[in-house]
Length: 337
Image 1 (cartoon, rainbow, N blue to C red):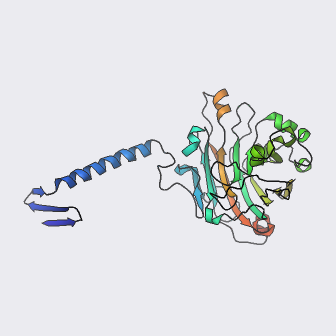
Image 2 (tube, helix red, strand yellow):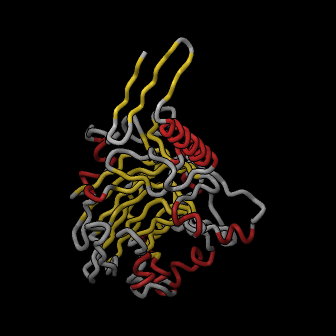
């Protein structure tokens, strides 16, 4: 028997004489052995501990990229018996203690997030846009100041090291929750619309960092109080946002939670105009544990919890009718799935 494999630099020839094989070009055998050996080592390392660059199939969905959340359990499209708001499928996010990737591992923080692809980012600074989706809290509890993890369940940013323009963030600081309506100026915070039991706020983080909202009168950019994480365990929360992401005084931000208006902010939304990464504010969603320092300080011997949440029917449009799941459901509209 004779087999030939030709190339530009070498030729592999295998002769069979009874049970004896003669191999020419022994260097090729050594090369194949070396490649196999290295592959086994790398595979073993990947299985031992995954990081941002270790997986070619980081979990995501069409039109999105995985946002440094490489573990396969971090994101799945699921169907019944999982919670589904409308249609047949929803997005399941799970983050476990130590699920960090990339720069998160040194911060320290961890997350499970997906972000809209650059070419599908529709938002532009100064332009009107609508968002609508449903959020289901499976097991995220309330936290107090001593071990608050700063959980974020939605953000918009220009990418890179820029601060998020908008943060939907859980606050554990009782001082903030107790003094928010007393300290924040009427022309900044939507106090008359607030859910007074809420620990989930909308924060203008770029304004906090660069726009002067770093004090009591502006409550560090936490301009709207949206809903309670604890009171909505195992419930769907329908969210609608209308904004223009303006860097001028003509900015606005309107938010409805379960068809009740909870936010009516007027003024600048952002300072940053860095278009090197995205043409406009890029949306990310999931579970982002933004700070573990307090937990590590006060509960260092205790493992951080595993958090699970679901999202469904995320839409971007030019009007409320295009994104409001309650209107879409009433009219028998097509689900996102």
